[in-house]
Length: 149
Length: 149
Image 1 (cartoon, chains in turn cyan, red):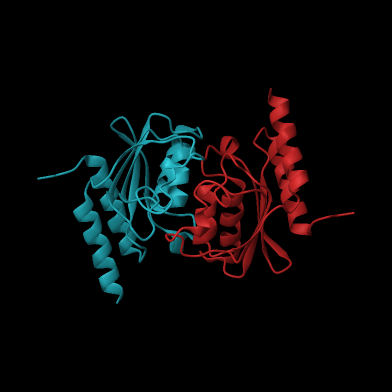
Image 2 (cartoon, rainbow over the protein chains, first blue to last red; image 1 turned 120 degrees about the horizontal axis):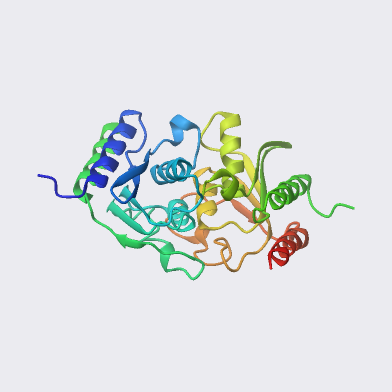
């Protein structure tokens, strides 16, 4: 029935919640072992915060919950390829693994554009796994943008 | 007496305050016309937040103060060349101008590494002015790292 791991299902639920608020539907969770320690939906408009991408919201929540500024041993699951801002935050947070859904040729910074984790100025590179829950994540985004036309 | 504009002096004060808290001394302010609408010192350790670079703190404060997620018409002043995370945030925030002090060959993303604002996946480029208050900003950083040895 489920073709991808539970954390990515949780990230997709967060993306759906973002869409219901009129935000571009992207969702993310941070896990430590089997436990979700941070959840975020894309929310710049609602929060009046241009940095409130799903990844940033989830990372900030996880760091607050764990009481430390580095998330060593934690993983990030996000429905869309991270942008440069979020890739930088993932590196600063020392996240161990990054799992993402749909690729983002227009704004992604992992396999597109700056390919941040390959830069010599990137000082921590997570293990990266793309395409997990890709079809579902992409369908959410397509539905959202089709609805706005 | 003063060799650089008032907002960069305020950013240097914020950097000094960060150093006093044991954080890497970087400071930033956001201005709208002559008014400072956001101030930030680098604070990841104190805030338990890996995203709490000076620029992010100042941008989030300015967006909250102005009640909007885009800082059109605003400028950012920061003592150090922004990293990829912060360059991405500057772009998302639609800041009009970026003024920075010291260059950062190890972690900068404006004139080093990804050179984010030159990427086709960057959808908003501020006007960029570097080297403002450079000597003072670099001296603060040198003093901080010398003191930790």
